[in-house]
Image (cartoon, rainbow, N blue to C red; front, side, top):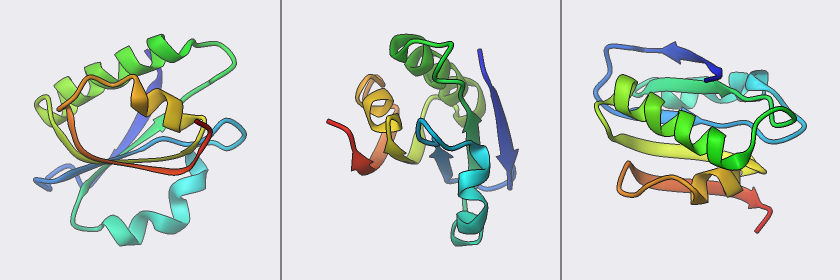
Length: 102
């Protein structure tokens, strides 16, 4: 399992933010204000030590434990887009792949 940060825990809607291969969780800092009405979960993934299927399983566990099995929005650039394709649906209502690598 990898680490993650959670903000606005009392909100009903949830957004999960996954960083790309050459960035980290800090990538999302300038965008946090846009999600003030959401519970925000920012993942801290080390892509060099985990395989895509391990990452997607961990995200599914986070969705189950932090979001009662359902997230409203998942946003990810680059390599995270491959991870998002491996998630079981309908665990996430809307997935936005910014600059996907597929």
